[in-house]
Image 1 (cartoon, rainbow over the protein chains, first blue to last red):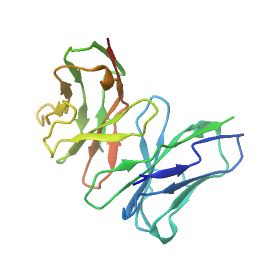
Image 2 (cartoon, one colour):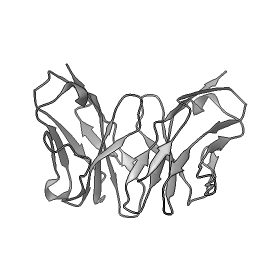
Image 3 (cartoon, each protein chain N blue to C red):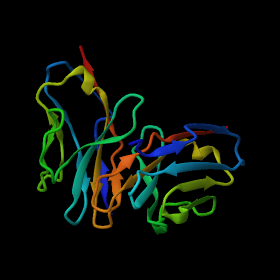
Image 4 (cartoon, chains in turn purple, brown):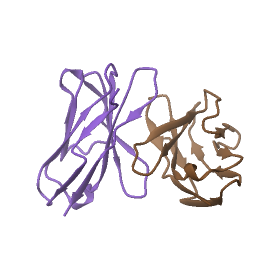
Length: 112
Length: 108
């Protein structure tokens, strides 16, 4: 089993540019999470999906961040426009309803 | 609100010595506590959860509701234990809150 897959692994962009991250969860996992991890900090939840429904997006900065999980499988997280403070590692995780959370390798975003 | 505090950002011990990574939490209900580990160049992975009451790689953690703590312990540290360790709490809304992590280095 491949585990949670994320791409790209690294991304460098200039501020004000758009960027998108992609996540493919473990097969059969109905719950998908996006986290942001700033340097020296633990991961912080941005959004949680149950199937295709966003059930917790209270921490998502909706003025510039958006996410979608069409068909309840893959998910995309977008930032437009990116700001310097968005530099971080963006983690995707998935779980079955009663199971533990499995994390992807993350995407390291650098905004210059 | 739920919060997790890991007071030590860095912790170094010698191989064979006991190690304890501290975790304190704040939550008004009955929490579920976890320890996650991230080895160098690897993804974040679950180490143990308090409801399982199991020992993984020689590590144990006991939930102390009176002291609101969930410290991670191992009696004899090994060099391969060097990693970043995160304590995490899950409340009623299944929201997982992480501490800021402790970088453990086991010296030879």
